[in-house]
Image 1: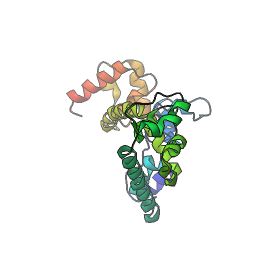
Image 2: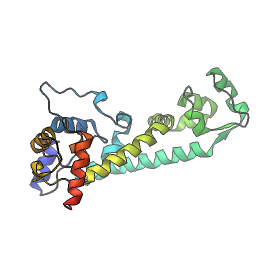
Image 3: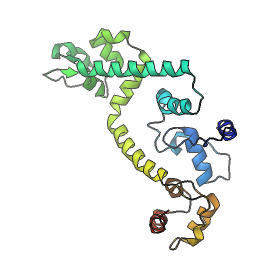
Image 4: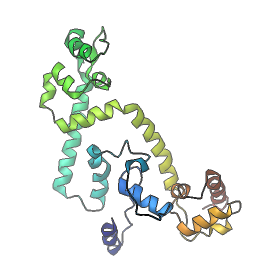
Length: 237
């Protein structure tokens, strides 16, 4: 990350800032900046509040477009990524269009202890059932055996955790709104009326880039953020 930003600096471009919702290195950098550390920093999944999205199987979806924008992803690799995304959408469309009769699914579902719907079940809904896997789907419908197993696994994960992922996306959008609210680099937080002394000290020490980053600083509580938001609005910053 340091090397990337050194290169961008030489080109006169804005620095790359990876965030908590798109990478573990973004979590690490943000933690070190906002919280500091007195011991060697250990990157653990428990540190990431959006870890359900930070999976190894979707790293390309999280970071390829970013890499493309700054010139790290060449045409060949980007074309491969686009083809994979198109293939993924095709498999999703297939899952949503296929429906199985009761007699087609009964044996597999009963073996897994699942209630067999009298009216049958769609392929996507089939995978949404916790005990049922891609392997079970292939038993029911051998045509899926010809699909990319990596993509099938990724899609299965997304389908099974859809409810959690939708909720996570809402939280991320709220966080991104706060990330867009940039804070002046030369802002003297001693001038912000209503901030606690500790909050002023920590904000002046860290000099957060955004309101979201300020909210994550150790020693700055939600009430301080509200005070800061009101002050920014009042001063039209």
